[in-house]
Image (tube, rainbow, N blue to C red):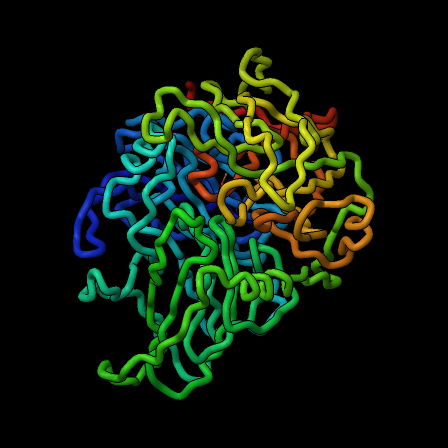
Length: 536
Ligand code: C2O
């Protein structure tokens, strides 16, 4: 592969949305940020220079980072942040992957405006396993707050309560014409009748799972999270923060304008935000005055619509792209994921308690030195290796909420043997809010082998696992009041974060890390850290 060099200057930029302006944190002054293009096997060098007052890190979400954990990006997990005025070069090679991913800030709530697309093309001369589209278009979905997002989260942390919801959703940075600012324009996707387009759809929103659809057009899904799937047609896609979906759309109408809509799925009851972001699919040669064909978005609680999409996803599992599902299991793990309540005497608004989130009753505490550095240089006192492989207290997830909402705090990792196979059941505890938890695992793709409602029952449920062509991804929705089972091979030495990609849940502690220990051979070991790796 070749070497691709990028310069990311992190800088404030005054930006107007919803008829009001505010300074936002950007890369190179753009919102969404620049698209990073590469081919499979290319080496990517991104020089990130921090020109803002916040500490910054960038994560290349879904890039496997084989042996290059130093370039992964989550603050205090794999690196110390880049301090104001400092630079760091992220240096990684894209191995065995092609498709759409995203990059985003991985510290504080800077991801709100610090994000963009990663487009990985196949190796030169290697075709897609579907007809080549006429054009490809990146579609980044997001959220917009009128107020400063760091102020929003700081206020929530202080009070112990949920943060304010966003004021709008966005498509390629624009809400489209909505009632509280009808004059603003939205994103336009120009098409020619008879041609096929590939949309590279990315959900970069902080806290919102979204529906996406286009009036009068079906979507053919060909890829999710940079893995090919068996193509299928759908009217509506559902996409959680951190997930990506490639969809083919045939411009099979003759003319006119068609509404493109992104609307929320499964808000928590506290969040009453039901704003739909809009864009326009516009047939060329059509006069600007043509009225737009509208579409009805699913209601916020349209679980059946979402499940219909999710349950249709299967790995392509072709000769060229086989699904390499681990058939044996070395580590058999069950993690509960959910929200709880902890005492907080200083939280006046929360009546002396605060919302916390946890996995297996552990609320993760961010260390002040990066765990990967502590591991590599044998620095003690940064983390402990006693993250429980099973829930410490037995829950019953059906019926009334379990009584053990209390969590313990700690910087705990779960250690995996290099190249061992892992089965992990993620069980939602559904305690407070009926939300899906989109759980993202760094450093790996995993196969989603099973899914169900209520309590996971190993004796019964394991028999029904799909070990043939389960969808392969890096971010999976744990259904509200249910569970998903994933499998992966721990073939990447390093420290790998796993967390809910709803940013507020990460803030509240719904996160943990796997430590995959270095093997002995040269291919099994983590590379040494780059000389410009930031220090804490
Ligand atoms: Cu896209 Cu750890 O995040």
